[in-house]
Image 1 (cartoon, one colour):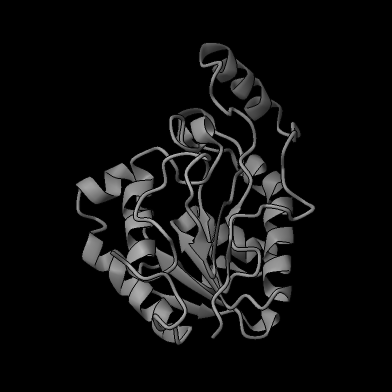
Image 2 (cartoon, rainbow, N blue to C red; image 1 turned 120 degrees about the horizontal axis):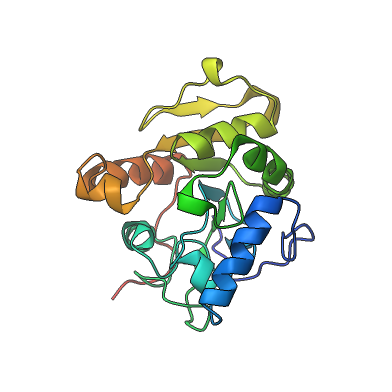
Length: 233
């Protein structure tokens, strides 16, 4: 498979400027007042716009993506994710610091089910459904560009993906390490993992070994090898 990498976020349906959820919009206004230097807006997807792997998280973190404007960047949740992406050849660096670094994702794209920081990191069900518009468009573009695997980080991301395809949760239950073939999508597969949050990693609900096992299976599924990819130092 030919490798290609980019940091573009030029999909026409990026959520910049969206204020459809009044609670989230008001909260972001408050955060921006308290932290004037923060992004404090909807966070767009990041990575290869012709990726074969799409990673779906929950929502921006207060001092991570909400601060930096890039998914899983600048907070604890991104540590394990980017280390693992680098180890398996999906990233040019082992960490994501800011929009000003030269990080590139390779055959991989990262987004969130909810694009805005929610209070207490808990989006309401109506906010998840509202933001599902953006996720559905992302998934359709991902599939149309040859995307093959979606990795849902946590149960909310998992359910959000299913909702985009009008699939029932009971038919595709969330379980760490599970794989679901989504029949309405052709060949698209949904992989499940516990979210790489501080809580999950510090309590050992999710270990680095468990996370790497998921990526090992994804890599095998995509028949990924190192030819033409980033050479790790």
